[in-house]
Length: 89
Image (cartoon, rainbow, N blue to C red):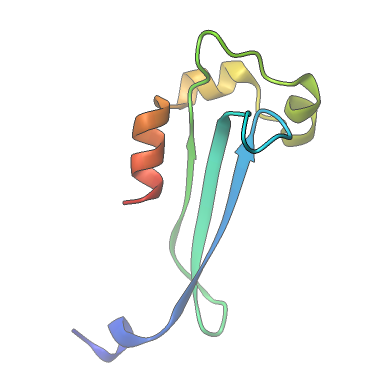
């Protein structure tokens, strides 16, 4: 392990949903970027999407606010289990 591997870093992340109620609404997108202690970006930003379930209707207001349509999430995304596993890996 080098000295740079021991340096503190920060992970900034953003989590978007298809609604405003955290207990009921489904994920749409996760994005993250890591910086060093001087806030210089380390590596590449992470952005990935979650496919909406077939039986779920996103709130139109959430789509307008985030700009993430169900069609985009379906085309670019993965199922919710894979999405969650990717966040925690």
